[in-house]
Amino acid sequence: MQILRDVLLILHIIGFAGIIGGVMSQMPKVKEGAAKINGAILHSSWLMLVTGLGLVGTLYARDFQPNNMKIGIKTLILVAILVLAIVGKVRGKKGQPVSAGIIGSIGGLAVVNVILAVAW
Image 1 (cartoon, rainbow, N blue to C red):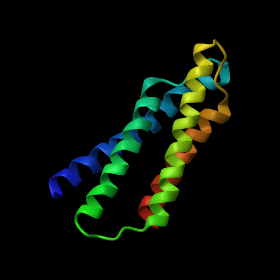
Image 2: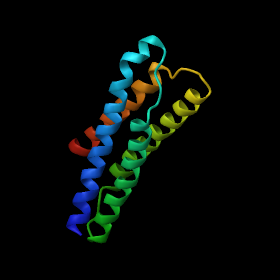
Image 3: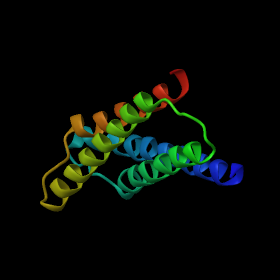
């Protein structure tokens, strides 16, 4: 069970790195109005959501009582990131530029999620 938890945690951290890397790669394009939601942002959002739920499952499987309020807030933040990424992807497919607010919000929410994971 510990190996599964470690693998899920590593994938969860890789998901965070993918979101931040995707956001940082789009920052120079925001000024030009050519920013888009790339695969790194969208797929890493899904990766973080799935592995995060898997990590909670491993906690319950080991009869450990996690902080459900923290898990709920982190899940809501991840869902918000995913919704923003999907909205941005749809806008990009319609030929509309993705605003700096969407790109910045995705990056900011990802950082808040890490702060909640570490500090709370």
